[in-house]
Length: 321
Image (cartoon, rainbow, N blue to C red; front, side, top):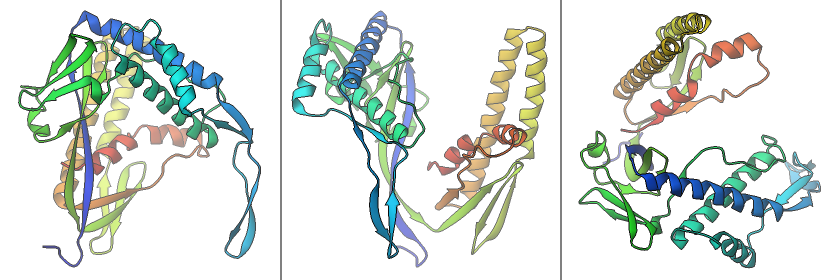
């Protein structure tokens, strides 16, 4: 039963876990996939139509205002059926795998181009064709047969040839019980499996957080001001910055990597304990964080801010267990 100050919301939850894999066929699949993906991006890019964007006059608050975008040249991505058919026919030439892999390549290529277009129109990307620099292969649902009882996924490579991945007896098996499997991402040494679920939560309060250099400061009307000290985290970062600098000067790569791992583990442990403690103190709470993206601050200030992993803290605090 809802209380007067509670609001019921449905959250879509996604958790991704990786399962190690050793199979010589995987490297061949990824090599073909990356090559086909770059080929698809090249073809789409060559067929983009560049149009001029003219200022628009709109009425806001009873006044006429000129609405003008950041870019004069606006890219129009070809999406008609005839073009997609030509693209698919071109990629099918010499394709050694199931035809659905070509469809997966085309969908991923369009996703990359669309992402570039959004960033370009916002002034965050240049007029440069995207390049694939990481090795991966995104698998379509139509290429997967999921057995939730056996906790396994069978991926079709070719007709009569399959790749089987199981998450039975993994450390995360209990965390995804009853969840559904999404499109997996295959890498050279592992398979990343996304699990999806939905959960109803009853939101009691909203806390706004101010991210400062040495603290997190929150406010909620019924509670008042909340202060979280981040000096221990800063101390961890400063200590390992010095240790890594000494290891670099002495040319000891193994020692440097050891300090990197220790720093990452201690940072992760601190953030996990922080987020768990806040969830215990303030259950069923939505957190609102300030936007920390700013290039106008002084270099020393930006360096000090970069010492605190704000994105990781915000993401971990926002997760629902």
